[in-house]
Length: 257
Image 1 (cartoon, one colour):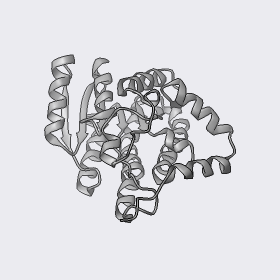
Image 2: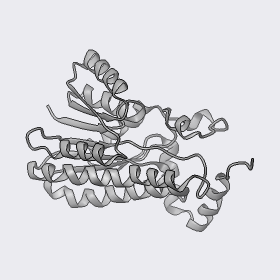
Image 3: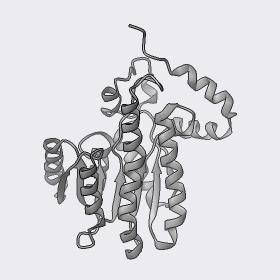
Image 4: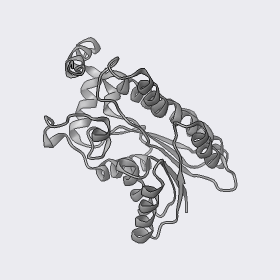
């Protein structure tokens, strides 16, 4: 059975990836900060799928925690076949209205952490000539949408480049590009989503199902939902200056106190 390591596995898309991969018979290494939630997730997966789950609590913004996960990925005695870089968070206020320390933490988690973990796992995957890396990006990265979107644009570009470099070794790389998805992400970021229409929301399971199908088909990018695939198509053809101006109108600084 292949082994998959998933970051941010205790909730949202991470938990949905854990379910999807457990259903396919994978052994799992579940990574997140909250050990209790990780154990509860592992217990559910074991009851439902008989999945073997290794729980690895770690704060990926802490150097020791990041190194512990990277060492697990690089361990030749316990090879990992699939890495899902999913952990992340967003900020409600546009740049520069959040503390710069929060901006740096977000950039580290969205960019530095996937780079470090992919760097740790990839030599083993290439040596064994099999395996996959899935990087969770966002449709926010397709258009000028602030610092979160800029970081996610890096994730998509990194994935597409890495896919070409890793292909001769039999290693697949996929950028997963979800739109608004029903997870804890928005609430944790303090985002007001009350004006969003019901039609824009995706279920985590739909994002994961599409991603695993696209991975099997060796596609470079996975976008769930017709609305978001149309959005991606438009993003490639609309003038960037026009789009940047329209996107800026959706970002408002916090109200003055």
